[in-house]
Image (cartoon, rainbow, N blue to C red):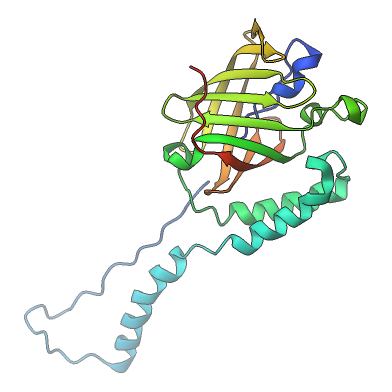
Length: 238
């Protein structure tokens, strides 16, 4: 669930925005014995073959592809891109294509009902220009961004590292098992000075891939967020 990219009222806290599937199951009816009182009814070889195929198909269609090689491919692709700040449009297209393949292998179909979502995540790639602060000289950009989520309290928090240490917290409202509405409540300048967020500071976030190590989210403004788990025990302030 990456929280969406919103525009806070202060430019120096813009990067604290929260970065905040469709599944089909197949089932086939059992082949009924047309002679229920005769379990020894002769069945033709063709019918026997059909029975075997019917029992095979459900397992085939429900099998989830192993996401591990796709995860490795994704991490290798984003490694040289400075969290996305150095990504060209072609790089962004390639990353999005790999992310789509990974999302198709999502092992957690209902992330908002999963404890895997809890904890502190480090942002390792995004397409959000405001979070990357690419309009600033590199020396004035935040070098680390974190997001914490607790599904039990429906709270989220974004945190910047050096040199600003800004934070923002938010309430989450589930829209379905993958998507939340986000309402920011307080910004904290330099991690110390609280400022109430304006009412328009809202958005939506969909969590499209989740496992123990990696999370992929998409915001309502079309931005992609990829995060890695750093502290599953972290609790968001209530």
